[in-house]
Length: 213
Image 1 (tube, one colour):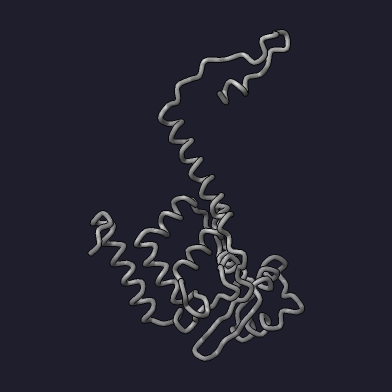
Image 2 (cartoon, rainbow, N blue to C red):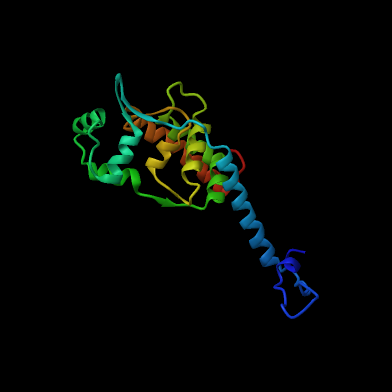
């Protein structure tokens, strides 16, 4: 029917649109249509479930110490290469950490290309949830509630255009404030225990078709 309606009309004919025999749908074209429809559906759903409020502030914690900066100041720094005049907290934090602003912006904006459908599937797998749990010990909301769900949602929204970077992840986090636990990040126990468990589960799933150990 759609093919019939899209046929061009012959201006010298009173018969209107000309009907052409429909070609049989090949398996390859059907698969391509199915994949395209799936990607479109996922993208539409992500737009529909985008949180009404995303993160506005990033708080870096180290033991009892904490520094909070506005995420849009980070975005402005990366976009213009200069610190906004009103970004006093960000300026103080960069001075305290003795880091180069170019290195900070590069770390925040270096992007990785992803396939959104495969990325979504991976994040909902057992291995994906294990990795989200490990990362969620470092990147989390203040009450540490639903850290896996929050982090996964932020990653999917940040990657809806097919690329993802750290700044987009922070901007997409579904709470007003997102925290990064530097003490935990630099902890040998977190690296050793967390990623050891993840690596063990990854190896088991790889060799045992996803069955639980």
